[in-house]
Structure formats: C-alpha cells, structure tokens
Image 1 (cartoon, rainbow over the protein chains, first blue to last red):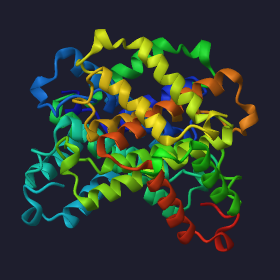
Image 2: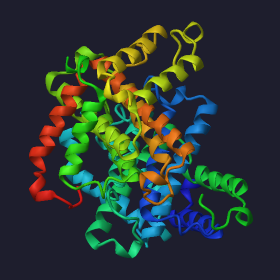
Image 3: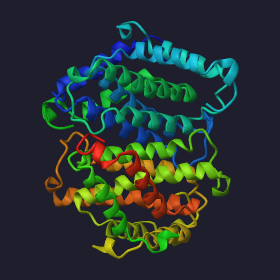
Image 4: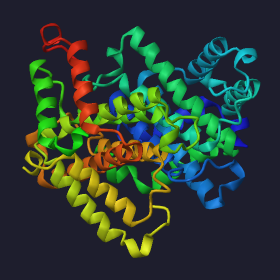
Length: 114
Length: 114
Length: 114
Length: 114
C-alpha cells in the first residue's frame, strides 16, 4: 500500500502542481472548490444508489475501480481546498478525531448507531 | 505543517481505531459511509453559502477553524470508506491526477475554466 | 390533501412573497439558491443515514414530521430557483417525465433497477 | 405558465404513474429516493460551478433548458418521496414558510443575509 509511505504533503503538492501548471488558481476559489467537493461526493454516492448496503467483498473489480476513482475526486478537491486556504489537513483530522473521542466515549456508545 | 511528515496510512489507522473501539463497523457499510461523506461535504459547503467567492485571506480565524473542521469530517469519512473497501488512497489520487493531466494538457487548457 | 387543489403557482407566489418582504432577492441569485437546494437535500438525506431502507409504515410520527419539513426546504428552494429564473416548473416536470417514458419504455425495464 | 393551473396533486399522480408502470416501487424506498434527490441537486448545482453568481438574464437559452431539466429531476424525486411516504407537499411547504416567517420577522431581517 502506497498509503503506508506517502505523506499528505506529497499528495497536496501533486494537486497544487496540477492546478498551477494550468493556471487554474483563479477559478479555484474556496467557494467553488467546496461546491466541486460536494458534487464529487454526490458522484461517489451515485455508485451506491438503488443497491442494498453491501459488504466490501461484494464489490466487483469494475465497481471497486469506479468507487476508487470517485473517492479520489472527492479527496483531490479536499486537498485543493486545504491548499487554497493553507489549512493543515493532518492536524485538522487528528484534532477532529480527538474531539469525537471525547464526545463519544467508547464505553458509552459501543455498538450503538453513531 | 504536520502534513509534511504524516502519512495517509497513519491517518487511516487513527480513523480505523476510532471506529473499531466503538464497534461501529457494523454501521460503517460502504453505502452509509458514502452518504455520510456527501452530507459532510454539504456542511462544508454551507460555510460558503450566500457569500461572495472569497480569497483565502478574507477568511477570519473563526471561519478558518470551522472550515478546517468541516473539511476534516469529509476526509475522515473518505478515509473510512477506503478502510471499509481496502482501497489505497494514495494510489487512487496519483492515478487520477495522471489521468487528468492526460485529459487536460496544460498547454491547451491553461487559464481557461476547468 | 391540500395537494389536490393547490397549484404550483400558488406555492411559488408564497415563496416569492417571503423573499420579497425580506428584500432577500439580492442574495437569492441562482448560484446560491442551487447551493442551498443541495444543502437542504443533504439535510433531508441525513434523516435516513445509518438506517435500513425502511418501508413508509416504519416511519414514526416524529420522523415523518421531520422528513416533511426537510422535504419542504428542498422544494421551497427549488421553487425559489424557478422564480429567480422564470422557469415553469410544471412544464419542466411534465416534459422530463415524457422524456423518461421514451428513454425507459415500461415493457423493457419493468421490475429492473432504474 | 402551466404553473398557474397545474395542481401539485396532478404532478404527483404523473410521477406515481411513471413509477407504477415500471414496477419500480420496490426500488423507490424512501432512503434511496432521498439519495437520488441529493444526487440530482448536485447535478443541478454543477450547472453553476466555476461561474460567477449570474443574474437570470445572463443564462443563455441552452443553459436555461439544462437548468430547467436538472431542477425537474430534483422536484420529481421530491414528489416521489412524498408519494412513498404519503406526505402532503403543499401543507408541508405552507407550514414551513409560516414557520420561517415567525423565525425571520421581515422588519428585523430585511436586506440582511439570510
């Protein structure tokens, strides 16, 4: 898994370079990037429309690849928003998980719907 | 920036641990995680509703923090979906950027709306 | 059911009056109304998150009321967009259904996933 | 404008007939209809991505038609959800507007962002 070694910063740099080489920074204002993130999340969701909630093993190879690509689109725009606003993604994620751990103590919520 | 050193895998492990400690895997089927990702993307977008497209420097400290937290929510569910389906996020993102580079050659699209 | 006698035009007028009385037309540009519609659709969807697909009869009174209110929010913004752009909602809906009838002939698609 | 004479009930009947003739009621559970509504709202929103907030008169004929069709998709699924749950759309909309009128008194909020 590349995830074991690739840093968030490396992915952000790749996204930033893609935008910069196309001079798309002028379009990539935070509001439109947030819109794009939401649209890509809907396209990801569309992959699961009308279907039963499926365990992972039931996703065929083709569906897996399509879901991976739609997920990538969501994350690319998320990283692009972080770039546009100079937000640290890792800090934000780790802080939010810590906040959720305090809000939902494991002993109290275990096994109940989130 | 923590992003310079934190790997995607480390963030995925933190998300996975949070879910596992609460025994929430039974709820975290891919379909519902995709729904949750989409809902969080809408909450992120809500931060920009009714406002002008704003350059980064115009986001006040409080708004920055709120946007960072909503962005974290989107990314946490994205990583959770990757965990549920054993998808490699870095591979997916790098492959999608490469695909987009071929689809939108810099020389041809520079400075035009994406 | 009020739906049996209330025209679409009457609902549009009520929405238009609400916006006009608050002088909110300046904020209600088509782009932001479309964003608001999408956000409200996510709030509607949130009512069904983590749950099984439920037959209507399983929605309790309280949940029914909450779903009705979220659905109203989606439709109010949809009507507001029609007002802002002077689109005829009934014509658009009837035209789209006719288009879908031609695209999905009943004899060919009956009982198969849409 | 057809909206001046067409009742909400008539539109609901047309949507119900389309679903019934295809025996799609089994797929049209409330959860999946809510997902579909959200996806269609994102497709509507996509029409405004990367662009300036535009006054109505700046929408060209082709764009107007595309927006009208995407809006129709959102509303059709909204009416389908009302059908699936036997909700009265007109009652819900009029009640929500009344609630908003009480929450946002015109004298107090006039001209300020919603």
